[in-house]
Image (cartoon, rainbow, N blue to C red; front, side):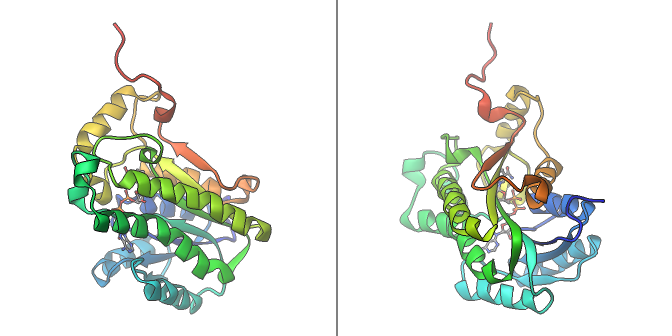
Length: 261
Ligand code: NAD
């Protein structure tokens, strides 16, 4: 029996079968979860519907997180299929590409800073607020973050502060929802080639660097992240909330990453 048998999971953030959310859906489906999906735009709908069908689901609702109305409507639409559910996966981020290269100070703009925080961080709390009345006891909420929240990483720029804000939200949300036995955690993934990642300048060099230096000497996969997400969604992680789990092949723990003579 799978560790998510009898649980319902809403997966956001699928743009392709390379998306981290796709890896999450794959692993959660394998572990017995019933799945529903959101798509950002009408253009993405056919692709997400096809992926949903692959995982035995026909529940796909539109959610554009820059709009409060769209977030509210998504949960209203979901209610047409599910009155309640157990797992919410937030796997959404965005910052203008021009701000993901070169100097942070030189590239950051008021508008870009606002957008990065709104789409990549605020949206998680906004989603949780709308979802709350539909969440079962022992529900688990999770989001995807990156090392740039706690270290400066070349070209990650404005996404760094946005991920720091997201990780802080995880802790505040965990404190808020804990008394209702609802857990909130984050997964900090190592770099993975996805559409969003392609927006970060020099991303291929980052992949090469991590592969050659990180403890496990390999990059992580969407399945590595998906398996950790399945664990976090399941009752096996019942005692954990407000945590950031690193799925980065050990990179975060390295103090020096050049070859010694
Ligand atoms: P992806 O491009 O496959 O997914 C990003 C998703 O965000 C897309 O589905 C897109 O539709 C959605 N999105 C963007 N703006 C939106 C909006 N306004 N409304 C609704 N949805 C919106 O890329 P990914 O790498 O799978 O990214 C998923 C998450 O994982 C992001 O939070 C990202 O920061 C995080 N992450 C990625 C990496 C990596 O290297 N790929 C590493 C660590 C964390």
